[in-house]
Amino acid sequence: MTRMLVTGGAGFIGSNFVHHTVTRRPEFEVCVLDALTYAGHRDNLKAVAGDIRFVEGDICDAALVDRLVAEADVVVHLAAESHVDNSLRDPEPFVRSNITGTYVLLEAVRRHERRLHHISTDEVFGDLPLDTDEKFTEASPYNPSSPYSATKASSDLLVRAWVRSFGVAATLSNCANNYGPYQHAEKFIPRQVTNVLTGRPPKLYGTGRNVREWTHVEDHNEAVHLILEKGGIGETYLIGSGCEVSNKAIVEMILELMGKPVDRYEKVLDRPGHDLRYANDSTKLRTRLGWEPRHRGFRSGLAATIDWYRENTWWWGPRKDGIEKAYDARGG
Ligand code: NAD
Ligand code: DAU
Image (cartoon, rainbow, N blue to C red):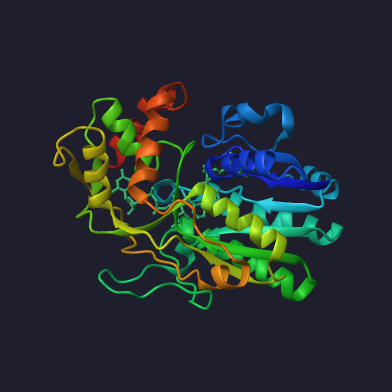
């Protein structure tokens, strides 16, 4: 058995990664380290609770991290503050968890000579112009726009430096927007779906022309396993489905799939510094490691995600009013 430590395993991508690992990769013995911030929930791991070890704790707690890293063979690092809008309200937890937390983890990985995979975002590269075919590549310069992406960029640079200077055996991946079950209702797709389910209109920032590349969380997590198995140490891999959709088109698709008139949404205050477009060239991951996304139809993936939220109101329902109150304070 390979002992795997998953930081942030009670969040959206992390809990899906743990489900994926337990059901499809039985050679791993999983331990989750998660601080259970507002974004992490034990409920996300209910179905696999008997198959994993769960430790509630902070990645900035050096003694705890040292002990857990010593007990692992491989570390998959997802723990982070992840929401751009929150980083615009209060950047401090982002600096702490995303930068200091990654530093603490890197030092433990260095001391115990463990394999690390660092999960990151394409937001570290800034944004791309609308209406072009340009894509980010592994060689794109770092140019983050928000406090969130600046702290993720810092964490990537720390990992790269620890590889080069200390020989840490790490890989990195950068992906654009994931979607699927267990995504917090503060994020775009779950917010709009749960708005419709609670009788609220979907809320579109600015013109809604901004484009995101949507990758199903299962495809993202399969890529991470491939990188762990076959990735080159010190290498970065961009993960991207190639499925680019504007925010306006998604809101209209959600309304249509949920049987509502497609113009029943509200335009609200734009996000300051709002990145225009994300798109990743994932040729390296596809050609060198053989990754292919299985969820090719965004519309069917979105329909399945809507069904998941419809069937799991117990999961998001109790948090919905609080999330919307926070959005009211930002202007919708
Ligand atoms: P999330 O907010 O749903 O989950 C983050 C998890 O980390 C939560 O369980 C939280 O409790 C935990 N956490 C936060 N700070 C912690 C700390 N100091 N110590 C221990 N645990 C802590 O985020 P997500 O959307 O699942 O993102 C996971 C990772 O993937 C992040 O690193 C994010 O930057 C990256 N990422 C996300 C996306 C996306 O579309 N969601 C895309 C690319 C990369
Ligand atoms: O690209 C990867 C990134 O994708 C990850 O690193 C982040 O962790 C993840 O949150 C996501 O960042 P975005 O800022 O792209 O995601 P968000 O869900 O917040 O917003 C998606 C788009 O929808 C963005 O253009 C803003 C817009 N939006 C968002 C909300 C919450 C709206 O129009 N209305 C909304 O209510």
